[in-house]
Amino acid sequence: MLTENQVVTQTRQWVQDIVIRHNLCPFAYKPFRNDVIRYHVCMAAQEDAIVEALIDELKQLRGADREKLETTLLVTPNYFHRFDDYNQFLNIADALIKQFNLEGTIQIASFHPDYQFSDLEADDVRNYTNRSLYPMFHLILEKSIEEARESYPDVDVIPENNMKLLAEMGLEEVQRQWAACKSS
Image (cartoon, rainbow, N blue to C red; front, side, top):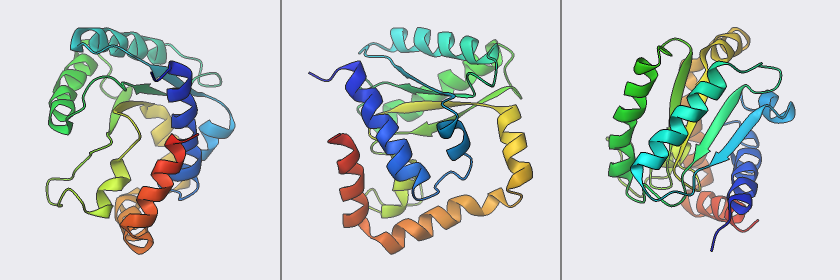
């Protein structure tokens, strides 16, 4: 049985060996280096428990000292096995952002092991720009995004560059690297 510690270790490995190594998010290195990323694992297999965990994480991040906490990865390894279910849940997550008056304060980036862009086939390597080891919600302070944009003015090219890089790497190599993170 998978433990919370294993999920955190593997997720940290994915952030380091995939996201940072391949510069999929040019803004990830600094919070990783400064150890201001919170990895919270919700082992629940019920949606209500995940809603509660998400609320708790939103509240914690909202009031955080950015020198101690800048971003949160809420990982849900035992739920959202189907990408469609996960994708539907994002509507609830967005509603919670509104409910707690966090629009403009926190945004959510979505990652799932079977992430699929609507215009791509399921086995297209470019989907891996948003594929993670486990379903997760990346909670990001808008202030951090604004500051990062100042140092990286052309953020609109990031997704395109990531897709190009993964296509050059090829599906087999990308899958091998993702699997290596899960074996740690």
